[in-house]
Amino acid sequence: MSNRLTNWLRSQKFRGAIKRGDRRLAQKLLQEIQKSGAKLSWPEKLFKQQLKLEKSLKEKKREIASLSKYLKEANQQREAVELEEDFGELDFGELDESISTLNQEFIEFVSDAFELSDRDKNMVQCTGIDGENFYELESSLVEYIEAEFKPIAEGKLQSALKDATEDIEGLRQGIDPDYNLSLTPHVYFLKYFLENVYCNYLAWFLIYKHGLLPNKINILDIAAGPGTVAYGLALLLNSGSSFFSVEPMHISYYSLEKQKSFQYRGLQFWRQYVEEQKPPTNAYFRFDTTDIFAYNNESKKLPAKFFDFVVVSHCFFADPVQRNKSYEIYKEIFRESLRSEGYVLIIVQGRKLFKAYNLRQTDDFIQEGNLIQKVVKELGLKLEWYKYLTSTGTREYVENFYQFAKENLPRQKHINKLQRQYLGLRYDSNYTIDDYVILAKL
Image 1 (cartoon, rainbow, N blue to C red):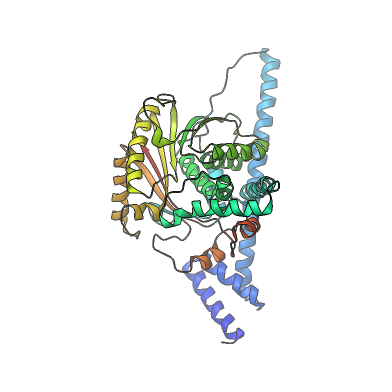
Image 2: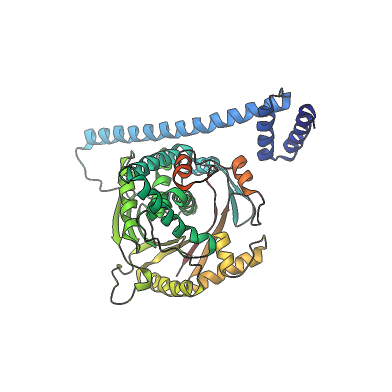
């Protein structure tokens, strides 16, 4: 087929996409037309200009929000000075403002940046990212990993990376990894960390959007790894700092994790990256290096009725015996350590969840709802709500997902170099998501 005919067909598809309101397809076709070098038609030029203006508008909204925050703080300082001049020094006490007072401009910003689209009542498609924060995180992660690898001899480094990769790759075969090798945390950083932070960011955003994120929050993270739950919340607050004050936010984060090396590396990187942010995240950490399967009456250290949120993020065991045993331990922890008005946040990969119960993931809403209710009930909880976060906009299997990701999803543009160098990957990685976010109570 000639280039001229191909471009004519693209233009016709473009016009059809515009008529149907399918902006995503129209944008994709416009990119293809531009790459071909063909001259743009008037509707294509108009759409291109519209996209440019929308991008500029998003940037201006953020600038306006930042300026509004500055002016608000300046006015508050001026009013305080005037009051002091009129009435002398008065102690008004601490203002107990709650972050749960929703900022609609921030909600709109996150929704636009991550290109969130409600596909049905419980499914949200996500194909974008807050590049300013995530790419800065990614760049800093690359610096951290390179500094960690630099003192290790090349031969020893490659051998240790191979062993750690084989352990973690067991996940793909339905085998629960041991996570106990010297470079396991580093391979995790390279392969899964960014996507899991991406998912946790959106989970906390949903909690914020429901008005459930308080100023002072105590979090227990079960099987915490390097702390992706805390990183996701920290990045969300960093994104929100242009829209509302995050300085009163106080996070007490309790990591329950059997591998000390995960906790150590996670804290190391936190100090390098998160604590250098302005304004810094006001977070306090406590590390409990305990295997949850060894959790019993004699080894209990967790404070009673203390936590606002108990989080189980991506700790869903493939082995049914281990999974059932973990459920019993989770239930005991929920009963003993969750506050009466607290919440349990469960994050689990969609394919893994359905496979564990010998089900095929489809767009059968009844099957999905019954499964979520079954899991929540088995954990001794009552469902508040759930959302399925997906890159593809469908629960069905997508053929040639790599091509879909390449064309539609944000690229992990800094970590790719290290993935090719140390893990032998032959393709670029993207920020993808296939996770259920489930909120429940006792």
